[in-house]
Image (cartoon, rainbow, N blue to C red; front, side, top):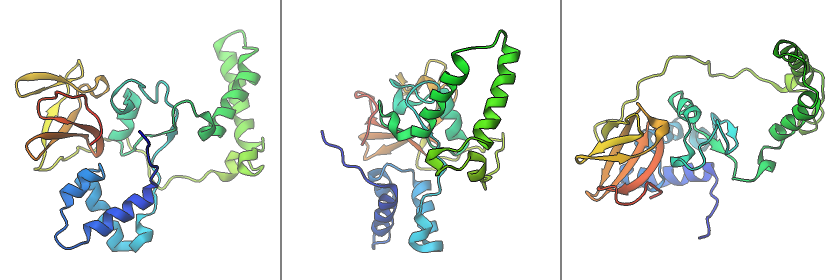
Length: 240
C-alpha cells in the first residue's frame, strides 16, 4: 500500500473549508480526519479568530525516536508510559519514521558526542562521572558552536516556552457523544460483557468510545486518536 504524505497545515485548511460548507457534518468530518470533535471545533475557532494564519502549527510535539522510553514499538499507536504522560499534559508525540535517524540528526549527533567523549573513558564512580558530565553539558550548551545552528550555541538560540509547566493534570471531558471506560491493570476494558484488550500503557486511564453508525467504534485517549474497530472488537484496533 502506498501512503500519501499530507502536511498538517494542509489538513487543517481542508478541514475548515469543508466544515464551513452549508449542512456540514462536523462529527463525520472529525472521523474522516481522525481528530476529536474538540480539536475540530478548536481549529474552527482559531480560523474565525485569525484566518489561515490562525491554523499555523503551534508546535507542542517533541520529536522523538521509536525506542524506549519514548515509544513502545509493538504497542497501540506506539504508546509508552512516557507518551501517555505527555498526552495527559496536552503534548502529542511526533515520531520519526522507524530506522530513520537522519530525521533527528541533531539529537543523534549529541548522543555520538556523549559516547565518544564521556562513555569511552568513564570515571571511577558515579559522583565523579556526574561532575564531568555537568561540565560537558555546560560546554555543549554555552561554548561549543553547532553546525546545525549555523555555528551558534544552543544557549544563543534557546527561547523560554510561552507554556509554563504545571504538574496539575486537567480532567478531560469526553462529552455526551462518547461512552467512557477505565482501562484495567492488564490493559483491557470491559465492553459488552467481555474483556477487550486496548493497551498496557493506558492502565488505569479513562478512554472515550464513540459508536459510529451502530457498527464501528472509534477509541480516544483524551484528544489522541487510538484507532477503530467493530462493535465486537473482532478486528485489531487500527485506522479508519
